[in-house]
Length: 184
Image: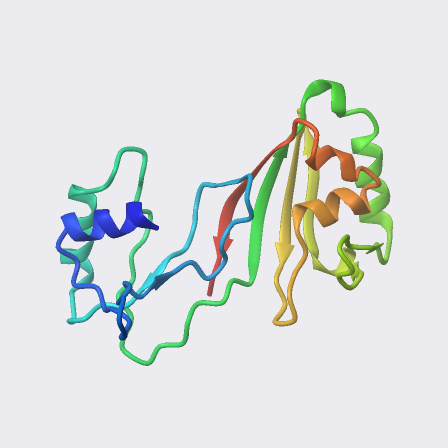
């Protein structure tokens, strides 16, 4: 978050701040990433203290962007607009070649099933992965998926790997990348 704070300060973005003894900029990720997952197309919300035009803000942010950061889209919303709520996530799970055996068959079984309940660790409630799995494909060592996010909460790539009968894949050499956060 500090990287973003510095970026916005350099670009002279008029951020809104919380009140209290240690004011903090009002910025958040509606769908923060879990530790160890790479994000390629994330959504961030921030509150501005003064109205800005989309074009001026976009130009200033691009001019001061840290190396490796790209701004794909910027929307300035009117005050009172509800917070963004993602309706789907897209992921790619890159598997090492020695870990790919049986994954294609597991994908076929999962897609053919009507339900796929998964027990979650840590005493969390079990979840049925199948109704929230909009797309699943395995090609060239990469498992691609699109997961729907209902208001009650969604599933994770780890849940999908467990539904495939391969919960070990997420812990042993796989690289998980969230490629998109879809918001209306």
